[in-house]
Structure formats: C-alpha cells, structure tokens
Amino acid sequence: MSQQQGLILIVSDDEPPAFAAALGEAMFPVIETGWSDATGAVMQLHPTVVIAAPTESADGRLDALAEQINAVQPYLPLLAINPKIALPENALPFSSGRGKWDRLIPRLRAALRVRTLHGTVLRRLNDQPVKAAIAEIDPVRDATVLLVGRGGGYPALSVALGERMGVVGALSIEAAAKHLNTRDIDGVVLGEGFTDRVVDAFLTVLSEDPRFRNLPIVVTPSNLVPAYDLPNLEVISGDPVYIAANALPLIRQRAFEAHLSRTLRSLDAGGLLDPLTGLLTTEAFDRDFATAVRQTLANGSGMSIARFAFDPANSRAQFDGARLLSRLMRQMDFGTLYDDGSALVVLTETDLPTAQMIARRLCSVMRHTAYEAKARRRNEPAVSIAALEPYDTAQSLLARLNEEGRRVAS
Image 1 (cartoon, rainbow, N blue to C red):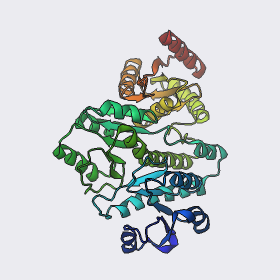
Image 2 (image 1 turned 180 degrees about the horizontal axis):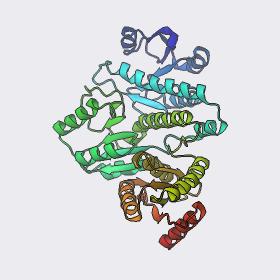
Image 3 (image 1 turned 90 degrees about the vertical axis):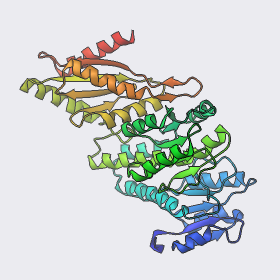
Image 4 (image 1 turned 90 degrees about the horizontal axis):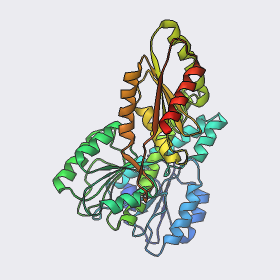
C-alpha cells in the first residue's frame, strides 16, 4: 500500500499500541491519536481505515466514533482490536490470537477492497433510481448467515443471530458444504459439536477455495488458533448474544460488498438489473416477457412461467428468495421481483411438468432459511405455474398464472 492510497488512523490511549509495529512493517502510513481527539482526527485527516483499541469503559466513545464513521462515503472500515464489549454494527472485530498480528494486514486489505468497490460504484452512478437503491440498502436486514453446529448452545445462537438476519442451519459439515455451493451466504458461524480435526479440515477447505476465502468465518470454540488463509476468520467466545453482536459487523460488510457487486452488474447491464435482487427490473421484465411470448408462439416452442409469492410483510424473505432465484435459475431464464412480494420467473423452452420440477427444487433450497427468530418462520413461498398455450397473449398467460395463484392460496 502506498501513501497515495490514504492513511490509517489509530485510536488508542496506549503509546504506541502493540499492533502499530505490524502496520509499519507492512509500509502502511499511520497516524495515532487518543480517544479524546478521535472525532476531529477523522474529520481532518480523511483516513482510509480507522483502527480503534477500545477498553471495557470505552463503549460510549466507540459507539459515537462508529456513528460518525458510518456516515462517511465511500465506506470507511472501522476495526476494533481485541474487543471486550459488544460492538456497533460497523466496527469489525479483530482478535490478535495470542499476541500475534500477522493476520491484521490481510484483514485490512479485505476491508479496503470493499472501500474501493464502493468508490467504484459511486463514481459510475448516473441513474438516480440506482442511487436510491444504494442509499436505502440495509446490509444487516438483507444478510444470510450459515450456522453450523449441533451442541447445546446451537438453539440460543440461532435465535440470537435470527433476531437480525436470515439463518440457514446445518447440523453437519456435509450439509454446510451443500448450502455454500447452492446459495449466497454472507458469513459462517461455526458452533459447538465438532472435533478440532473436523474444524481444521473444514477451515482448510474454505481457505483453498477462492469462492469462500474472503467469507466471514466466526468460530466460537476459543481453543482455536486462526492460522488459515482466511482474512475474515475470527474467533469469538462468550454467550450467544455477545457472539452474534460481534459476528454481525463482519457479516454486514460482506452483505454490503455483495450488494455493491450486484449494483456494478446492474450498471454494466444499462440499469436493466435490480441491484437489490440481481433479477431484471419490472420494466425490463415486462418488455422481455411480451417479446418472449410472441417469439415462442411464432416458432412453436414451449414456455412456462412460475410465480413465487413471498410474505408481503417480510422484505428479508422476499429479497433472499429473489437473490436465490437469480443465482439458481438457468441462464436462458429471466425473472423479476414485484412490489407485492411475488417473484416471476420465465422458464423458456420448458413444458409444465418440467417447470413444476424446477419450482420444487428452488423451493426446497429456500425452505432452509429461517426468519424472525422467535417465530422461526421458514421462507416457504406459495408457488403457482402456468404454461403458454397456442391462443395465449402475455396478458392472458399472466391472468391464468394469477388465477392459479389465487387457487393455491385458498
């Protein structure tokens, strides 16, 4: 990192903090300040990263600093070193691991990549609707975490995480691997119930797969020494509420990064993709759907359309389901998410029995996500399917699909 990329602001009442030497060895430009001057230093110096060393009595000052930093654009990473308190949503935890700081540099660079991505998106934004989507995104609301475990603390940890985000549960490493391969996951929390050898093998596999290397991984057993090529690996021990609170910032950052990536894809597609879901915007879908109906009738091939009706009062379930559809549907298919909470997917070259089979497979993946921790509700959309007939128009096919949807709902 060169000085042209900005500086790192260290907030600590220790002179100098133990981790400053590691930053110097990596040639990071660093300025140190005390807690009493932190707010002014952020305003005057415009750092690219802020690293704070909070004490148990500094939670109020850390909250104020985090609130100030959260308003900065582009994204300004805030790291909290060896925290002993529950952290604000945007304060990334970093535990030194028996006094070693070699993992700090990869953690910083992973966070700086998100900042660079955000800066790229802001530079490319010209369309006001896309700007609004960026401003309104709530990374925590839209995040989905994979909870792996089978010990006595699993239910309480599931509830604590589920208060803030969607939770996909896995009672085995094999089930966890299946979820990682089939859906978008914003973080993994590894709970109790596994031997050290199993945990080591799981983390080694994740570190060797570029798809998961930057994924936030929170391990709750405290005897692990995080010596893996996983920049966002963190060991957090304590009660379930504390673990969930300090895992949340890492998961939040990952969810924000995923949203930025979808926004760039939307910009590359000329604004035809919805950055919240990765599906087409409703205007683009309506236009493409009408064209697809005409072309299908003209060449005599088949086409089906599926409607997934999500809970209209649960935006988290809607967006998670829509993003899952975007990830799993075939390249030849296209879909959108409407304001009423229903997602429509056009299945080209597909007859009714095949469409029903595809819809069942998609729903089986969605059902693994739980929302609203107290109720433990599952993401189970009502599904209706209609196939194109020779006499159909786009309007008549949609009308028949909606009629099928009312029949299913009743």
